[in-house]
Length: 274
Image (cartoon, rainbow, N blue to C red; front, side, top):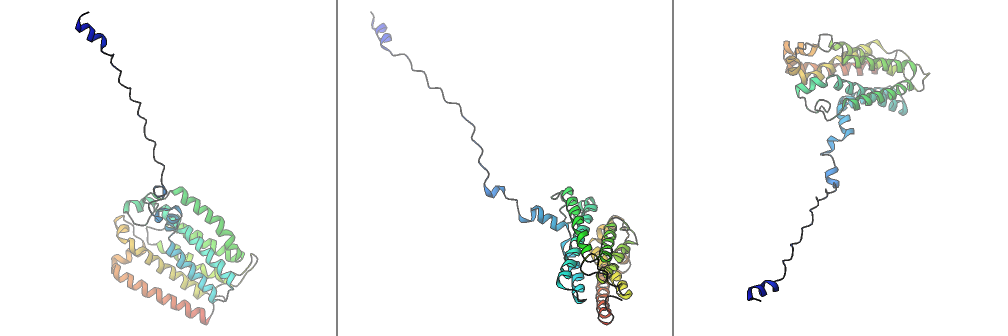
């Protein structure tokens, strides 16, 4: 046997290379508590719903009406019912207002409008309005049938004001009517559904209606530029185009203070009820 054949016979066979195991996809990491949280507290559903309710106007109106009830001698439980009733009703008006103005607020890029920027669903707000309606009716009737009817009419007028007369010179009408019904809600009110008080003083009713017009002008002043661009010609815009927005602000503030002073004088000298 030759030397080359001997070497070829003694050479061990080649060992096959190990086959690598198939790589497995890494499992996704479980979400941490930090990633599951919303971006901020302001993006929570209840906070967005609160912002859409026009909370400052609702709280101020409820405090004012409840304060008048307290000055009129109503007991604490009745004052609490008045506060809760007006607060719920004003929240309903605020939600409905943002629902009606959703597309308009989106086009105008108005800040602090969760419905306009899409962070709050319209269905959620409609559900809140429905819940408010189920709550405000028994709250209103708790002060008496006549008083409750007066407040519910005022609430209905306020809701209609979000749709009717907004772009014309009668924009003040629904504000005047709804505010003029507040003295009737208080003067007829008491405790229990069967309670019936006395009709309100005419002077207080008229002054309350004028106060509603003043509040309407003050509420409309921040959006005059957008309203003018859209061709709306409500009463505050017509006045601002004639005398200027700054002067209208000063005049309205002065008129509001005079009306509040008149309400205080008449309420002290004559009283809320006839």
